[in-house]
Amino acid sequence: MNMPMTKVLFATFISLTMLLQGCASSLTGETYSRSEARRVQQVQYGWVEAVNPVVIEGRTDSPLGAGVGAVVGGIAGSEVGGGKGKTLATVVGAVAGGIIGQKVEEGATRKQGQELTVSLENGQTISVVQEVDAGGFFQPGERVRVLRQGGTARIVR
Image 1 (cartoon, rainbow, N blue to C red):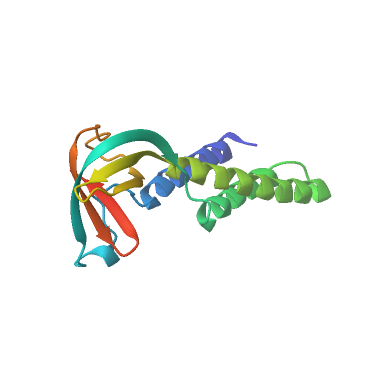
Image 2: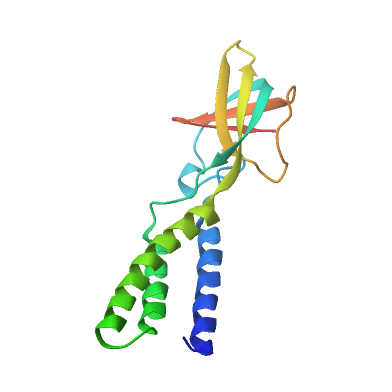
């Protein structure tokens, strides 16, 4: 493979990684989707009983990572050999690139999360998993608000 093609593939890979990170939706307690705006939420107060760090898996349902990976892999494979060997290398490169692209997307969209166990004022105990926000991990004993909207709950300071 010649040097300019290597640079193009590397730049494409870096661009893909940055794009995937930008596409990842946030799961913090302070981030709302457009459809959640201006909807009534039930508010309850409570205290954090326990905090456990968890990993929130990255996306694997988007065709973006696999698609871009397949294109990049196919281009890289097409630079190898000639004739039928070149065709085979292109196909193998596209398949391998698709698999690698999907793994890159999953890794790029993986998030640090926290499982929060909260004792509510009404005596009920609940657990919610959400992404760690800029404020960091909640602390046991911290007073919090639990916001519920349909089947979704979030914990905020």
